[in-house]
Amino acid sequence: MKNTIAEKWTEYSAVISLDDAPELARIQIRRAFYAGALSLLKLQTEMVNADVDPIVGGYMLQTWREECDLFAQQVLNDEA
Image 1 (cartoon, one colour):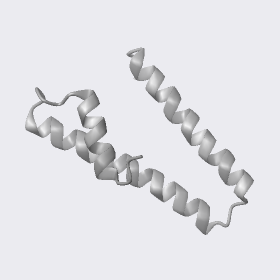
Image 2 (cartoon, rainbow, N blue to C red):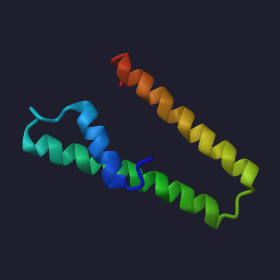
Image 3 (cartoon, helix red, strand yellow):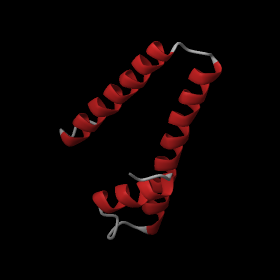
Image 4 (tube, rainbow, N blue to C red):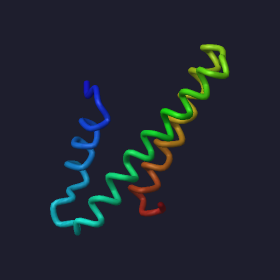
């Protein structure tokens, strides 16, 4: 299991193969990756601060996962 966002970035960047990408593109992609991670952390923090019931919180996490899975499928289909 990867325990840091930096480790997940390294794993992700290897999958998308940035070797031939211009430096500016690599910087922007990394920034977008971290912005996405921060957005998810903010959602989770808001959920905790709102004292959301654990069952509802689990549903919220599942909904976010499904949203991300749908987007990933759209990317694979060249629809996003």
